[in-house]
Image (tube, rainbow, N blue to C red; front, side):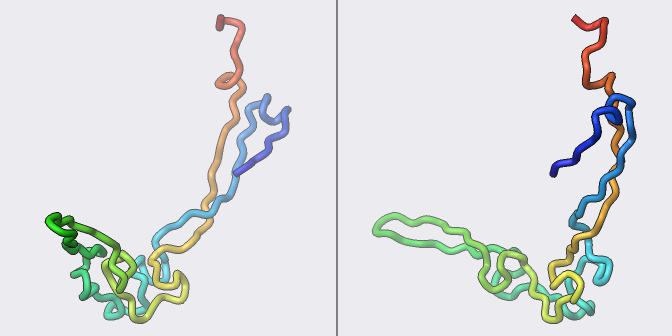
Length: 114
Protein backbone atom coordinates (compact mmCIF):
# COMPACT_ATOMS: atom_id res chain seq x y z
CA UNK A 1 0.00 0.00 0.00
CA UNK A 2 1.37 3.39 -0.96
CA UNK A 3 0.32 6.57 0.76
CA UNK A 4 1.82 9.87 -0.25
CA UNK A 5 2.22 12.74 2.18
CA UNK A 6 3.26 16.20 0.95
CA UNK A 7 6.73 17.21 2.10
CA UNK A 8 5.59 20.27 4.08
CA UNK A 9 2.85 18.28 5.85
CA UNK A 10 5.42 15.71 6.92
CA UNK A 11 7.80 18.40 8.16
CA UNK A 12 5.02 20.08 10.17
CA UNK A 13 4.07 16.82 11.93
CA UNK A 14 0.74 16.50 10.12
CA UNK A 15 -1.76 13.90 11.35
CA UNK A 16 -3.18 11.86 8.49
CA UNK A 17 -5.98 9.31 8.21
CA UNK A 18 -6.28 6.48 5.68
CA UNK A 19 -8.96 3.88 5.05
CA UNK A 20 -8.06 0.22 4.52
CA UNK A 21 -10.07 -2.98 4.02
CA UNK A 22 -9.65 -5.65 6.69
CA UNK A 23 -11.17 -9.11 7.17
CA UNK A 24 -13.39 -9.25 10.23
CA UNK A 25 -16.11 -11.56 11.51
CA UNK A 26 -19.17 -11.13 9.32
CA UNK A 27 -21.78 -8.97 11.02
CA UNK A 28 -24.66 -10.65 9.17
CA UNK A 29 -23.99 -14.20 10.47
CA UNK A 30 -21.81 -13.34 13.51
CA UNK A 31 -18.89 -15.24 11.98
CA UNK A 32 -20.68 -18.60 11.69
CA UNK A 33 -20.86 -18.50 7.88
CA UNK A 34 -24.51 -19.58 7.84
CA UNK A 35 -27.84 -17.77 7.74
CA UNK A 36 -29.21 -20.07 10.48
CA UNK A 37 -27.65 -21.84 13.46
CA UNK A 38 -28.63 -25.24 11.99
CA UNK A 39 -26.78 -24.48 8.73
CA UNK A 40 -23.31 -25.35 10.06
CA UNK A 41 -22.38 -28.91 10.96
CA UNK A 42 -19.21 -30.80 11.73
CA UNK A 43 -17.69 -32.55 8.74
CA UNK A 44 -18.40 -36.28 9.02
CA UNK A 45 -15.41 -37.26 6.85
CA UNK A 46 -12.76 -35.75 9.14
CA UNK A 47 -14.75 -35.44 12.42
CA UNK A 48 -14.31 -31.67 12.39
CA UNK A 49 -10.50 -31.73 12.30
CA UNK A 50 -10.15 -30.54 8.69
CA UNK A 51 -7.40 -33.12 8.06
CA UNK A 52 -7.43 -36.73 6.92
CA UNK A 53 -4.73 -39.05 8.21
CA UNK A 54 -3.87 -42.26 6.41
CA UNK A 55 -1.10 -44.85 6.40
CA UNK A 56 0.62 -45.68 3.11
CA UNK A 57 2.78 -48.74 2.58
CA UNK A 58 5.63 -49.02 0.11
CA UNK A 59 7.22 -52.43 0.37
CA UNK A 60 8.54 -52.84 3.90
CA UNK A 61 8.13 -49.18 4.73
CA UNK A 62 5.03 -47.42 6.06
CA UNK A 63 4.47 -43.72 6.31
CA UNK A 64 1.77 -41.54 7.77
CA UNK A 65 0.28 -38.98 5.39
CA UNK A 66 -1.89 -36.07 6.53
CA UNK A 67 -3.85 -34.07 3.92
CA UNK A 68 -6.63 -31.49 3.91
CA UNK A 69 -10.10 -33.02 3.95
CA UNK A 70 -11.60 -32.83 0.47
CA UNK A 71 -15.17 -32.79 1.78
CA UNK A 72 -14.81 -29.59 3.82
CA UNK A 73 -11.65 -28.21 2.13
CA UNK A 74 -9.77 -28.26 5.43
CA UNK A 75 -12.36 -26.18 7.32
CA UNK A 76 -13.66 -28.96 9.57
CA UNK A 77 -17.24 -27.84 9.03
CA UNK A 78 -19.81 -27.90 6.27
CA UNK A 79 -22.10 -24.93 5.69
CA UNK A 80 -25.39 -25.98 4.08
CA UNK A 81 -27.01 -22.52 3.79
CA UNK A 82 -24.17 -20.00 3.37
CA UNK A 83 -24.53 -16.40 4.43
CA UNK A 84 -25.07 -14.11 1.44
CA UNK A 85 -22.83 -11.40 2.87
CA UNK A 86 -19.67 -13.50 3.34
CA UNK A 87 -20.39 -16.50 1.05
CA UNK A 88 -20.18 -18.89 4.00
CA UNK A 89 -16.64 -17.87 4.99
CA UNK A 90 -17.62 -16.23 8.29
CA UNK A 91 -15.40 -13.26 7.47
CA UNK A 92 -16.05 -10.24 5.28
CA UNK A 93 -14.10 -7.20 4.16
CA UNK A 94 -14.86 -4.12 6.19
CA UNK A 95 -13.39 -0.64 6.09
CA UNK A 96 -11.19 0.59 8.92
CA UNK A 97 -9.83 4.08 9.51
CA UNK A 98 -6.21 4.37 10.64
CA UNK A 99 -4.71 7.60 11.95
CA UNK A 100 -1.02 8.30 11.77
CA UNK A 101 1.19 11.16 12.88
CA UNK A 102 4.23 12.01 10.82
CA UNK A 103 6.79 13.30 13.26
CA UNK A 104 9.92 14.86 11.75
CA UNK A 105 11.80 14.51 15.05
CA UNK A 106 11.38 10.71 15.02
CA UNK A 107 12.70 10.22 11.49
CA UNK A 108 15.37 12.88 11.02
CA UNK A 109 18.60 13.14 13.03
CA UNK A 110 18.71 16.23 15.19
CA UNK A 111 21.62 18.58 15.98
CA UNK A 112 22.48 16.55 19.11
CA UNK A 113 22.89 13.24 17.27
CA UNK A 114 26.29 12.23 16.04
